[in-house]
Length: 445
Image (cartoon, rainbow, N blue to C red):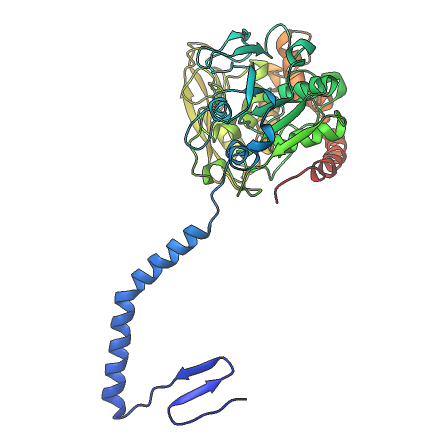
């Protein structure tokens, strides 16, 4: 029921004080002036308070290692543990996962496993990693990028759990997920559990695409049938591998807190620790996905050997302005191409002047790097057809390129005038199947 009297208007929501105007023009002016003054004085404070409340309501993203220490450490008590990690395995305060786990009570860390580039980093791509003793912790180190790329039974026989904590870049050819896959297979056979301390997919984990992997091209840079950009966190990758390769493995994923699908690394407020020397910034994940495959062939520099690895492409015989125009013409979301000149200090065209383009990441949220890779490869194949850049061959560089591409039909289409129409129909069906497989293992919305 609503009741009205001379001074108040009452509703079901309570009283709303009304203003009775006496001497209309002057009183109205004074009232309006007073209200305006109060608003101008208090509005900044109100806005500041609102922003403070909004900031406090946002949940900070917490990596899996911190969630482990805060919520699951008791489950490790009395366990014999090994850790597969590298310099990127740290908490938000830059403390190594090795140290965080060893500080926990009643946990016996027995050994460490080292992936490509080494336990403490500093090794080049493809360089053999030696085992031995970690100079920091004094623990024994087993190399997973040396004579063998998977743990032996002896490496696992006295363990209960292996923890995995490495920041990845979300691309199939980056070998950390290959090491994780081999670790899971070995641990399944040995009856050892695997715990993945989850980390973000730096590009956001939302987009996925690029060539799939043929069985004939399975290798250490392509260990499972997923597209080049697979759109999953390490924990989600592990769930896919368990589902499709290691169903008897005891797998636990310690999830992040606060991470949402589509959130790039740049939104976290975290310091980026390079997982390898040519991934110096979080944005390098995008550039690696755009040009890393091309770099395997060695016919065009992908910027390795310059301060902008994977961020620029070029060769002494490229017309930089023409290439920039051709790549900008489709107006792909999130990137622009600028003509540039550079001279690599090592790698392809060492000490030679190269002409090409620098890739500028303008909108990470909308960029789909596998489309950029596709555009670069097909544009070079078309505009420099006379050089036969992608001609199939039996040399080691072409074999590595084929393994990096993964899909032989795509690789062959680069040297064919009419091969892409057939390829695209097949690729669409394979990606649709992958989308269903991927959806079944996702952790984050």
